[in-house]
Length: 112
Length: 111
Image (cartoon, rainbow over all chains, first blue to last red; front, top):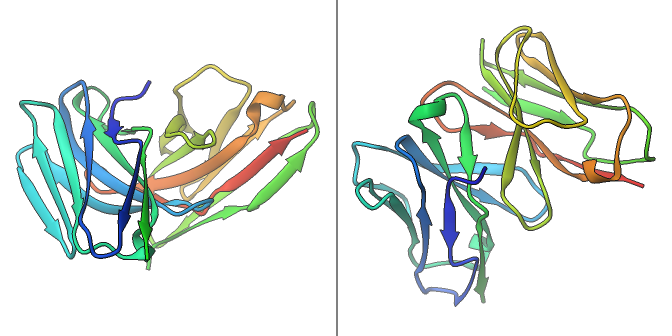
């Protein structure tokens, strides 16, 4: 069953703008991860944030985690056309620690 | 370096035919291995995972099976494909507590 739910389902912005995607989940987690998928390709791991962390940065990516609200956000700053892809959050749940449960994704389109 | 190979990239099979998709991992030992399926425009559904040779856990009842004959080899099979088996199949590996590394996927179309 789906654990993470991304919001919005689709997002279209201009190059140079920031893109924010949100993820909500239902059960307690060990960590939450964000992945990127270009059309018809495999997923690429972007960033992992542990349950005891609140914020993490990687290049132009900023991820926050609020375990009290069971939510996370992914911010991509100064977006580029090459950032166009689907972005998925995935949770490593305490109840099933060897597997990730993925959300349905946000389709991001960055217009040049 | 660690890599994952998944093949074939695309496959068109008739209903009732058998299926065998293979995934191999290089550069790591005793990885956790996973098979996911992705319907068009949707998230990933976990089908099988394995924490060691011969150890397979199934997440959903289905027409598919998985095997891990070697530490770094994971095979997804079916004896008779159904139309509903069409989808994008992804193999992945991980070491616990880290991110997953995915293969490039197999687009399966059952006709």
